[in-house]
Image (cartoon, rainbow over all chains, first blue to last red; front, side, top):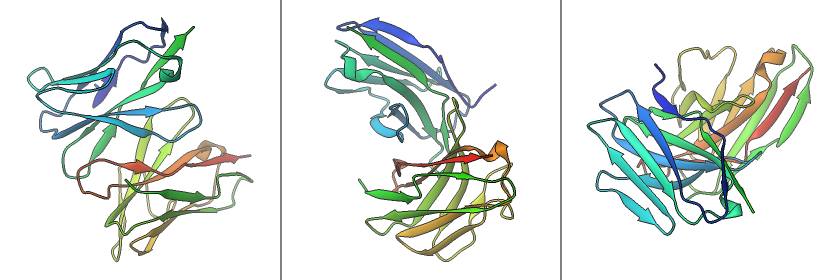
Length: 109
Length: 114
């Protein structure tokens, strides 16, 4: 089993749609959780951290379920510019950071 | 955040040669990380580089193949030695300036080995 697993997609959605990405992790001792965004031929960039209480940043909502070892990212009102690969990232707090393989999103007009 | 630059941005190299990639950060950071991202894959950590000590390599990566230097708190190099086509990849450095597991990446070095 991979340490961090994501649905690779691709997700093809129309503008304005709501799309949800899921991620599971295997290490129950994991401490920190993130979603990164990677555009084609670019470096990954931090999108948002994920907290147990859930957090929201504009159209983006991230949630963490420690009991199920599950992380989600919800994007509302999708824009063309949201097209990218979304990476689920899990850290054990000791600088051991594992990146998921990413979920590709295509938003179409 | 941190501003990170890498040199070269891309290179095409012959089998058996070596390439040194430079990573420069605009602020002092304790730890720098080197990752590899092969085509269509996610990131794999090669090693963690602390200033003033030996780099710590992840399973599957060895110092002879990927020697790392960390001469000061703003700079690091990764060398890909005795290259083969399997080393063709994007190599990225990153830093965690706040020690909060939040990493910021350089733009990457796209390496093609013929």
